[in-house]
Image 1 (spheres, rainbow, N blue to C red):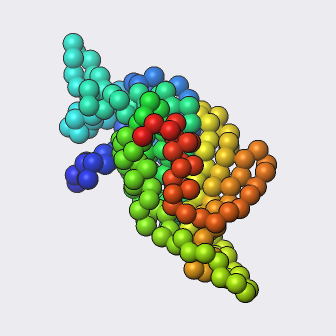
Image 2: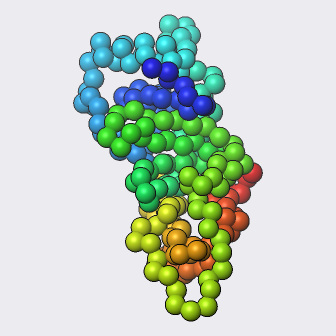
Image 3: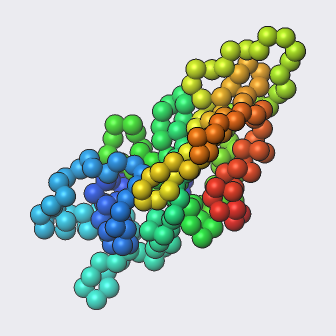
Length: 217
């Protein structure tokens, strides 16, 4: 199986956990990484993980020791230094993507399948990430004005929900749910217990995400 597809790196839980430890990530918030072998892994299993990471060009060997490969150091530095995480939940598939923002970069971590142990890792600039957020697979195209007369019933599930959370404690700072309602859509935003709704547009939603990600595009 290819370990890189369209700029996305594929690795398993234990490989990812080992790289996080090597990068100095002491506390983790985001996808549940408990699936896999027990925390106390024997030496032979650790060596197999290292060999797999080497084959995938995720680690290099220098002076008889394994180090995170130079091309991946920025990604794991972002994961280590990020103070915020933007969780994205697709209302139709239920897939959750955790996006870590630091220094103008966004590192996205997502399960390849809902029940699998494989993780997809993607590194983007904020501008690249914001451009992807506008795709129909993430944000709806709906942007019409409500017509006079009875309003359409809102969809029971949001099209997409974004949550801004602090790292590493995971406390919720703000949220934005985009919910289709007939020919238009509404943005439901929450901060500090206060909730407000307004007519959705991609421009407004992207502006909020840009602010959340640090505003460096």
